[in-house]
Image (cartoon, rainbow, N blue to C red):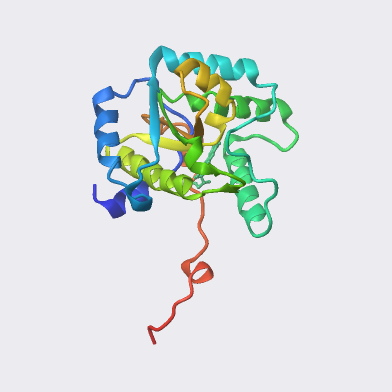
Length: 227
Ligand SMILES: Cc1cc2nc3c(=O)[nH]c(=O)nc-3n(C[C@H](O)[C@H](O)[C@H](O)COP(=O)(O)O)c2cc1C
């Protein structure tokens, strides 16, 4: 699979088969993903790569906490100004449509929320974290390590696509960082940025038929000096 194909085929997968991903495959993905660029090659990322019983333990603890408010190390956006709110809502609306979940169906909506907390039953997860001291600097925030984590996260997801795996980057995977710190032994000096659920896609599941849209290039790019 070439890079264009991987970019074209990657999409968020939200239903997984129960067969486990071999750790050697995850290792190959991670070793190549490490070639991602970063600010002055600082390579601010660290990873917890989790499967099997450990991941089950996290799922269980997350479900036990599900009534508590999310408390991620990197706060949710406080608001979504336009046009971002419209785009965000479109994803939710279409996903619920595919899932056959009505606006008023609180029970099914709750079930779907809990599925997210369970990483959509993915057999593995990759948690990305950084050193707190590189992000929180006095009274200012250094956003660049987060940016670099985004670069490596995309590498991971594209490589996973090449191996026939599915992924979904998930803020929901890191909404209870205290649980992850406790179960995985991640120290307080680290900020947990994002989780990537990873596994073999369950292609029969309708939710995986969903294909999110993009704004056309002309709407987001302005060309200069090519006339
Ligand atoms: C930082 C980040 C956090 C995300 N968190 C979640 C999440 O918690 N749950 C989820 O279902 N999808 C999550 N997503 C996936 C986005 O909804 C998805 O990437 C977007 O709708 C575009 O769809 P695509 O990935 O299928 O192209 C997240 C994506 C990113 C980049």
